[in-house]
Length: 211
Image 1: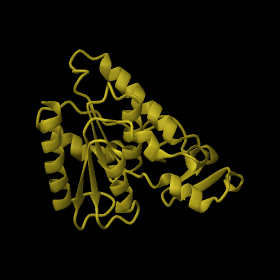
Image 2: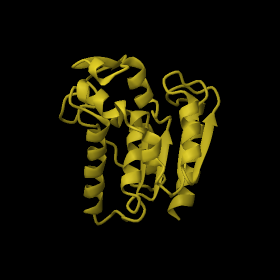
Image 3: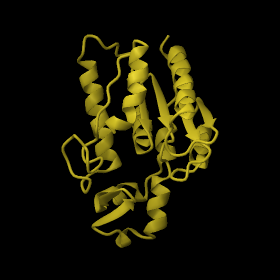
Image 4: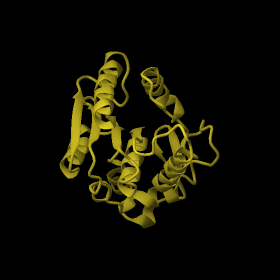
């Protein structure tokens, strides 16, 4: 969401980078964008990113050859999906504790698609609709993202209890060119010294990737 990305955006903007944060449609109960969480899926979120990407291409102040996607948790997964669909338009990917576990979580909770209810508290903080679970139930996210060939930066805390570190380790294996930095002591979200360390990795990656 906008609030999650804002601290990173502020730091990057101070370094002269053009950064845009937004809320996904139906991405949360407090989303500033339209839409209901009951209608949201990973693919509606991908279309949101694609709409922002198209808008960026219309702006004179944006270099279309130097666009990088950055996302946290589910936003990281969606950024990875979008990058794989638009490899020529996305120069790089910064994925913070990306939630590649979502398809496994769906299958663990609902052994068959017939078991999926019309709405469910898939996350402790958000009720989603049946379309959300159906969209990920048989989705192979690792196959989908593996076609992205440019450099990828993945950051993940070793104390993450929402998305296990193993999911990023597996992504490291399927990407042709990726760097995984494990942030010791960090959970699902970075703050304090973990945030500062994450910013160091992100800035170093962007300086290399955008030069």
